[in-house]
View (cartoon, rainbow, N blue to C red):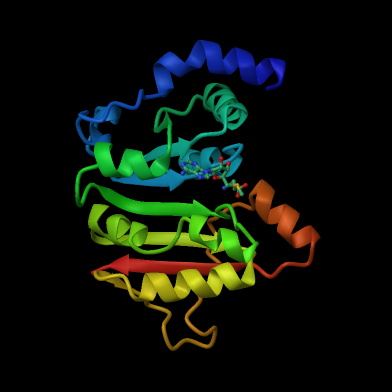
Length: 212
Ligand SMILES: C[S@@+](CC[C@H](N)C(=O)[O-])C[C@H]1O[C@@H](n2cnc3c(N)ncnc32)[C@H](O)[C@@H]1O
């Protein structure tokens, strides 16, 4: 961690980080208002998270991440921009969703450039697969959305198949000219890992599903 990230982590965690507590109330309770909740899984350094939250003060954002320097960096952004609508849980997203998130309580999920696990023997570690996607669908409210982006072609194809097979999720872009992938969402800022992929000439694939 840089000195600034370490300082932010130590001084701001008590205000903006929620401890993992398996029997806690559902995540929306942490904001003190009823605004719709977006949960981001694996925000990395969190710059895109801060950009999106700053542009949407009427929405709440819960970031789930296990990489401590990134948490320090997002805390620093929260302080610098005086953001009130972000909270962080430093814990495995799967467990947070299983144990701290009520069904129907999320208006959206953002999963930007999840770890690609490119080796075939590691594909089973990929996050956006069933039955995890079934749980994401269960936690979404009716009309809510799941937005995933990846620069790995085979992960994009795999996730498209897994999400298409997930009960309760509908792909509004099925049958479109992009073989079921969504067009770029203009409101999404470029992330650090996206830039790395673009530098390697990777094509970015966007997946956007709606809860029925
Ligand atoms: C490839 S990075 C992408 C980061 C960021 N979204 C971006 O686009 O720059 C994936 C991130 O997901 C986080 N991550 C992976 N599995 C996770 C899990 N089970 N729970 C929480 N975070 C996770 C990693 O720590 C890492 O920061």
